[in-house]
Length: 274
Image (tube, rainbow, N blue to C red; front, side):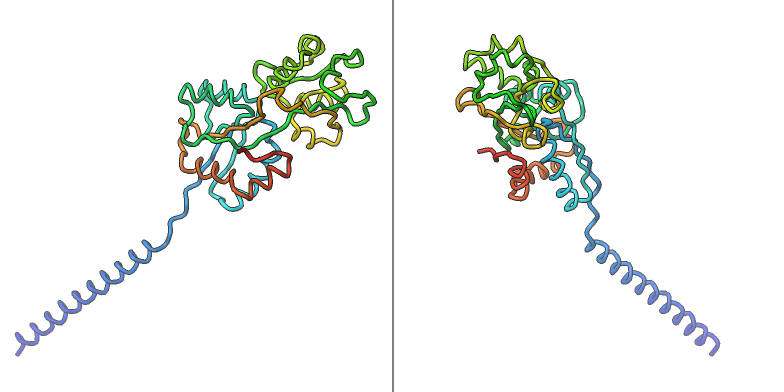
């Protein structure tokens, strides 16, 4: 009888252990399934966008909207003249997206395989205008008026690196006035600096983009460059080949072409690229 009771106790203990193990395994599987069904939080991403400074205001508003929808993404803007940004990229400065104020800088980067060609697309378009201080009394109705003696200082972007300066030079060459205006030129590192020179009255006039002029209540637009006097002011955008965040960069670039972004660009005076 003692042997039988002992065996019964051993059997009961063994069954208890097996049952406990079974419950533990089932519970573990349940947790694994539950965990696998919970979506993992997206890892944080920082994107650096090197962009023409004339896009500053529109991109700032777009940044707020995009980060609200994508809190894991931090957008960092590096703004400046397109030529200077091009040189930075060629010298290895970290960037994920490049937005130029002219095709020239993008073409040169593409030729050197600095951009992902498949992502390149024209983003927005702009106009070239002459601005003067808000209270200026000088009359100007056409670009040719810049040759008058009443204009002694005319602000322009550096023609070697600033697309706005390059467009201005092209237009003035087309109109046959460059040789007379260049001696009056006060060259600036980017188009926003040209605008500042006019706002402060350090020059009588300046050539900027329409969008820059609309951003200031201290200047007024007097003339728009004649159609055909220069190449269209087109802003191409592309993801850089060296970007370590290709999917995130492509996602943000795609957002720039949405109706939501289009409304922002148009609010600041841009036309969406064709």
